[in-house]
Length: 229
Image (tube, rainbow, N blue to C red; front, top):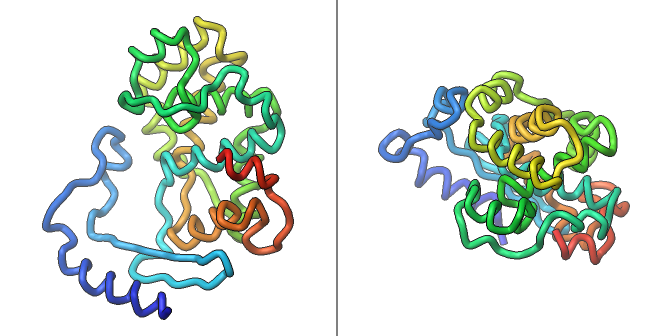
């Protein structure tokens, strides 16, 4: 199958529609300033075949995609102990719900809702320099250095009132071990990591290769850990 031709066709079909509908995220001021006239798409198969089109090399803040990589970093170090204070079930509620967190006494349903990702960030803070370790993991996975967009991270911190509430709520219930500000600094920073479509497609390759590095073939996670993610 000619994946490059398929992606080129998708890009050609959608590019004339840019700016004609939809809006960029406005709840974070730095994201509201991102041009809506961009479209990028990238693909990397389990066998390593790649294809990309449009603005696929333009970095953007990966936001909630970062939750998968922070979870991977935490599982590498903590394995099953990670789940002592984080659930593994669907939430059925908004991703930033306070109500469910109160009902379940500060234990987030899973690591992919905001409360769960903040709880994962807390575990990473306990392990050491979380931001450096996460950037290093991503650089190894995609084969290129990545960075935190400082403007986006600061904008997240300036407006992240609900996430601050979630973190304080969990701290009150004993779910978080570390200082709330330190934990949120890691969480806001991970959401502000800038990567391109091509880098993300490569970095996520271990998930379809039974936990093996997408470039080197060495283990990133065990097979069981990969299925858990």
